[in-house]
Amino acid sequence: MFDEFGPEKIIEVYNPKLGMKGVVVIDNTALGPGKGGIRFTPTVDKGEVFKLARTMTWKNALAELPFGGAKAGIIGNPKQMSHDEKDAWVKAFAEGLKCVCPGQYIAAPDISMAEHEMEIFVNTIGDKKACTGKPEHMGGLPHELGSTGFGVFHAAKVAIEHLGLDIKQVTFGVEGFGNVGLFVSKFMTEAKAKLVAVSDSKGTLYNKDGIDFKKLEKVKKETGKVTSYGEGKVFPCKDIIYQDVDVLVTAAIPDLIKKEDVPKIKAKLIVAGSNIPTTPEVEAALAKRGILVVPDFVANAGGVISSYVEHINGTKEQMFKLIEEKITKNTKLVLEKAEQEGIIPREAGLKIAKQRVLAKCKTCK
Ligand code: NAD
Image (cartoon, rainbow, N blue to C red; front, side, top):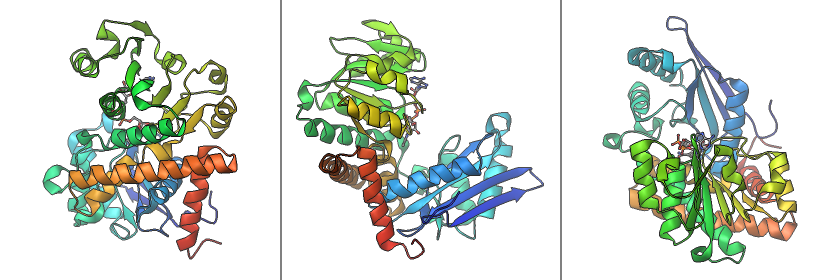
């Protein structure tokens, strides 16, 4: 489970009185303290946390942030706990991390963790630098600003230009209409791209004449379903990937696009806003069909860039500026390298990230 990059440390935290168990994997700190969220699920284990920590090593290196890669998991079902019990588990987990936090590990929210839990985390460690994703009164930059969606939009913009297309002429579809999907739709439509397909967990909506973003946002808020929009055709959720669009943005589930889907995809460009929407093999098969894929660790780094700005006590204006600069620069770099070397963008991004880590890593070979 380890190689020349890491993990450097795996810390298991137990609290027998509460029955709490958790794990932190600090993968690589060559570029700075390991940065990554804490997820609280019944099934999280060391292997899952390690894979996610490694992804953070590459994502942070590619975004040129002074952070290494890490991730954490608390093993339990928060849905079956009272608020007090959940809070006690988070506190106990933080107690166990005082030895590494924030010097070697900086936390953030992930599944079933939010501002409230980050406040407990900071108060337990006794240092505001212990995590990001804090409430606004502690200097946090709220999720509702749409930092990840803003970054995904800029990755899409660069890739559209790379393909020689005009953003004002392209049609696009978005899988998922939550935090990431909603903001990508907003920023893309503001740039005059035409939203023609959108999905959520209830189904897919397609309208070749265009979907009005503001009306869609209202419909989703009032009914909980994008398919209640009223104009256009409705399909099962999975069908979002087969719709007639120039650009497909993924913003919901992992393992969305399978090998057998490749011949049926009409998009010229897929921008991975969600994590692991497909495999490297499928990305290579898509490339053979001439479909460009901007991988997740390139496109969705807006969230961690926002975390960095929070970490240095920056403002939301600084956050948006830095996301635009970094995502634009790094997406261009990755797409150009991929083209020059005849490799897929994922491979090009990994090569750049690895070089940046190796240049600073004293423990790597
Ligand atoms: P979210 O919970 O706000 O929204 C998820 C959306 O996906 C919801 O609209 C839900 O209805 C929809 N959905 C669920 N199942 C679906 C299905 N089968 N088909 C279509 N839609 C479905 O989540 P989010 O924060 O927007 O995150 C979305 C993805 O982006 C996840 O993969 C997440 O890991 C990744 N991501 C998020 C951030 C962030 O800052 N929010 C950062 C990096 C990566």
